[in-house]
Length: 213
Image (cartoon, rainbow, N blue to C red; front, side):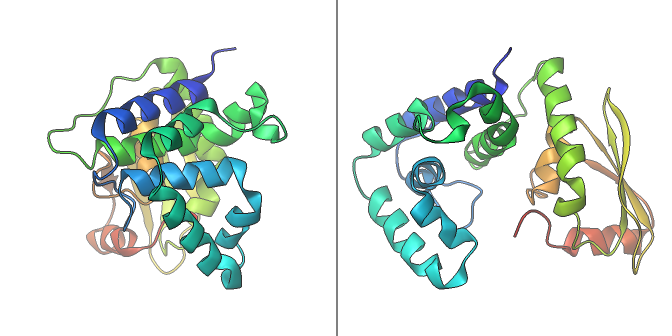
């Protein structure tokens, strides 16, 4: 089995090592050290990661993540590179592929596209197909706050009706699966996606908060 999630993880770690701890990312308020700390907590500290879901624990998560981010950066990136601990189901290659592919793809692009002079990567068809499958599974959640209907057309993959229209009509999004994933996960400003529809509907979609939050 080709481990695309593992490949994206390693490329992200290479980029984090190359750039150092204080470079910007597309994650608001986070530089590269903060992103690395987030990934370590996500896979290795469920007692802290629960703060993403439980509001009264969010402060503890933020404090501990910042403390970790201010530690040894090289060691922090090495922990991300090692992957999830053995007790975490994400250490299983199949679970890793299912739960981490989009996570590491998006965060690699969060780092790459926050730097000057970036260009989209040429991704293999197999990876584009995996991203398309993942997007179809999550699209309803990602676009739930949009007042428009959503139809996704993935280059080389077909189309997927992600959401019925609400207060507005339907907007068609065209692009490679990789670019559509970035748009769906709220990276609208850097996602190279074509939007088709009524101007008011497109404006409403552009203003909508997309992604998990």
